[in-house]
Amino acid sequence: MTVDVLIRAVNNPTSAQDLVKNVAQLAATKDEQAIPTLVEVLKFNNPGAAVAAVNGLINIGEAVVPYLLENVDGYNYGARAWMLRIFAGIGDPRALDLLIEAANKDFAFSVRRSAAKGLGNIQWHKVPDSEREVQQQKVCDCLFLALEDGEWVVRYGAIAGLEGLSQAIPEARKIVIKNKLTEFLTTEPEAAIRARIQKAILSLP
Amino acid sequence: MSDWQMAEAWTLEEAIANIQQTEDTGKRYYAAWWFGKFRVQDERAVNALLAALKDETDRSPDGGYPLRRNAAKALGKLGNLAAVQPLIESLESPDYYVRESAAQSLEMLGDRQAIPALQALLAGGVAAAVKAEGKPHLVQPYEAVIEALGTIGATAAIAEIEPFLDHEFAKIRYAALRALYQLTQEAHYAEQLMEALNGNQLQLRRSALLDLGAIGYVPAGQAIAKAYAENSLKLISLKGILESHLQRTAETLDADGLQLLELMDSLL
Image (cartoon, rainbow over all chains, first blue to last red; front, side, top):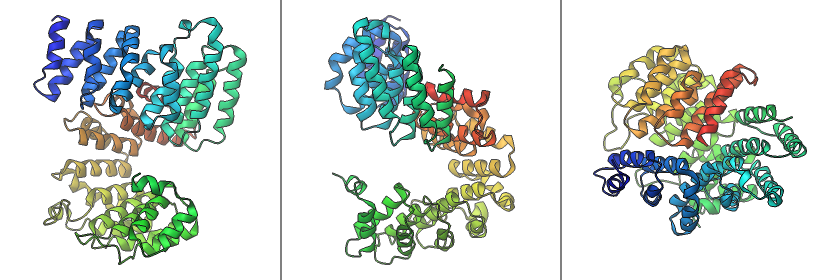
């Protein structure tokens, strides 16, 4: 089926379940033409369809980013939350400031956790050499702050983010992160999070 | 600003003052909620909640006791065993929701003294477990009672719980599966909960997810990660499984633990 046909199917579903199936099929094409339609799906109140759309948009990747950046303000809160997840999944540095703000300040802990994790996934080769260190420091500061979040899952996401970040930074900075995590291990009350810290520390020098 | 948001901003002293005053029943209600939410250990809070369990002034149009309900809920979160006997008494409250919250709190406190009173609520078995006339709930909070018996380790109740595996309500069947797995460690009970992850009702998949997390069934990890439900719930479930596992390994991170962490990472 051509992308056009699949787009029409998404815009004319016969049922909520039908919509999910149609979105998944459209997403599977990984066709850039599908971007506006898939983004539109984020506005419908259908979580199954939104998840399929989010996965599809993450798979399309870079081409999605400018379109989203242009539209993120105009959408309702739910759609913006999905968009932040897409940015977190793609890791494009153009979304860096949005992700940093979301990780520390978004109202919903599910958005904060995925933003925190996404910050460990940034495609640093796209950031000019002259800016990279400053931006990485911003990400590190943001994630250190997220380690103090009241919600366990955000702290968990922050550790995953720090583990990801640490793979892209110089040795001296890795040690700063390792020391922070080692100290954090002594104060974190939840066993599952302590386990995640242990795992992150294993990957550091 | 909503009432909840306003209450959330209280200090401990304000919350205590609010539960002790009698003029404004709304404030007492939120204060009870506050102590549970912030897991307050202060003796004054515990004593105020114990007193609130017997409150007569806050009544709802359906004949219920809202303040008592909130007090019963909060007392489970404070880890204070002084609440056990009063909560056991609350299992006989005329208010279904008080009985339900009391059972849930007794589950959290884990004290075996609660077992006989909880078992008593299963009297009459499945035949008696029917809808209360004119109410949206059954005559007893069976789910909460069965789950509490499982968590507290009431092996003497196994025979009484087994028939509920055939109750017409799926959530009660799941509660029985959960409790029986906890009480017998027999895999077939947990496996039936895993099958429930593939059911076609979201509410039931959610229940099964939370039940598997509560019993800490490690083999369910992959199935949980793939289940068609919100990632937030799957994360809570996997966290429960990981923490059970870590208790068994004294927090040593082994291959199973690493795999669970990987599954959790993939859901963030």
